[in-house]
Length: 268
Image (cartoon, rainbow, N blue to C red; front, side, top):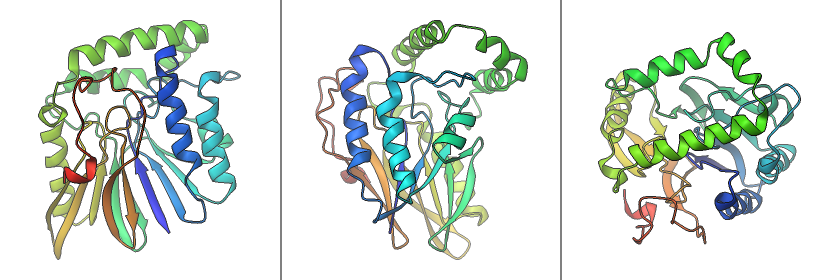
């Protein structure tokens, strides 16, 4: 059986994000639940996600249905919250069957300890984000945001996300400010003996490296993203590897709009 780990799809309900969302939903539908035991989402599945008591953003329906179908067929679903969807909760848990992890978690998978983290807030220099995250998770802040009409909430979130991406997305994700801190985080987790494998997202840079563990060599993999690389991780028989999905998704929304992107498996 295979374990599929993916991160940073940043599904967007704006008209320009429709093709990307359709391609991602098609990828989920082609997964065979007889061969895939687990699907683990390492955060930022959505560009914005917020759960109202009686409302779910309808444009995400095809993707949510694809996950529900996999769950119904026996695939175990896990969701590690990211910085764009740390408000994930009741709906994904109760109606789709996701096991929600609001902090990094270590799971026993096929006899190995696998540490899973989105990666937000792990950069020691990013104190502003850690402060924002703490405030945004306050019950009062959640209650206050829920007073907004869902259409207004989505419009505000899209505006903030577009501005943030223009400011913080480097031309070359391998040179992004989160790459080094995530690498050090994984190296330290492996050295501590907590896990044999560490998988992260957030940096949008797919990479696979080996680091020492107390009794040998461990593996750090960054799943990259679905936004620009269409990269993901496959775990099979205790071996974890990067793969890229054939995709017709336009890269006009990312920093590689005019460049060919090297397949993720060649970036190890």
